[in-house]
Length: 378
Image 1 (cartoon, rainbow, N blue to C red):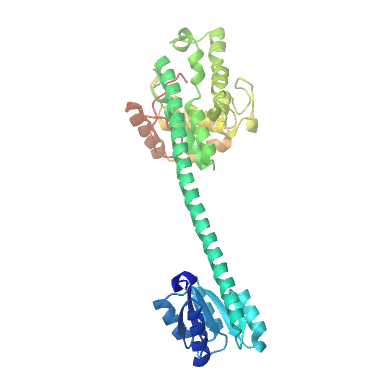
Image 2 (tube, rainbow, N blue to C red):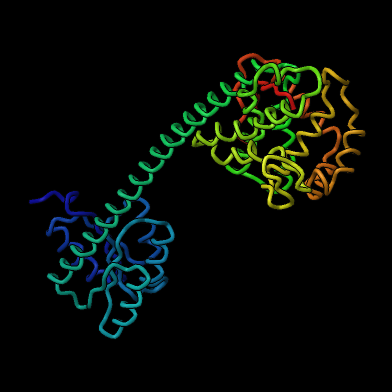
């Protein structure tokens, strides 16, 4: 004979002792581990001490119906299947109970072959439900593991991106040193205003990357022009202005920088259409480039240059406001003027500390981190 633990544990609940004891005995002989309870309260107490796989309960009992017991077991997430036993007049009630989670119903007086069939169906249903739940949990675990692996891979990719930007920035830093930290400062200033204008997530990362690499095209400008201390001739000016095209063509070939290349391409455009290389104006200039234009001018005016000392914040602010609607987008200027001077000072100090730190990786995401100086002639 099969051991009771292999067939299942059953709790029989009925206020009529002869019916309860008769059914329990038949089930024991059939190989089930069977216990009894006289009412719903006793059944719950019995269940807590000896959890069952299936509960057969009379529908109508004093002090708590089979429906009450069903609800209590469901509330406690017992996992046990519930089969209701009822008289013929209660069949519709039993069917309604099945809609609420009962596994099956039996008619009184019991026909034992029907009892065994109902038990088999209910236990098989419960077994399948548990298999589905176990499979779901296994899938969730697999998804969690795959997600962790994907996140690790993404971090590796981001580290590769960092190394790429660091190499590009270092290459530019070797070419021009008179404006050390410029690229980092303008990327921080651009980020500050971009966030205040609602740019976030991957779009913000692309803005930061584009601002950081805006002058990368100067790698293609001859030293005689790039490092010339005096004024440029018209011919030399034309060569210098070509750094926009050179930078754009370089950066757009790098897949993860393709969107960031738009700042590189448009960072010398003016709001009034008098910029280069395409003479775009107004909203035709991408918003990140319009934001960058203010950040770039602000840093140029407040940084020491070979030909003059840094201007005071108030002077730079007044000049940017004066150029609102001409060189700069008025909406961006409004955001710029809303930032406290102390915040600009904080960002400048952050850039200075990062520039002084050796081997610091570029900052690709909108979160505190360091980036090496990519010095450029603004």
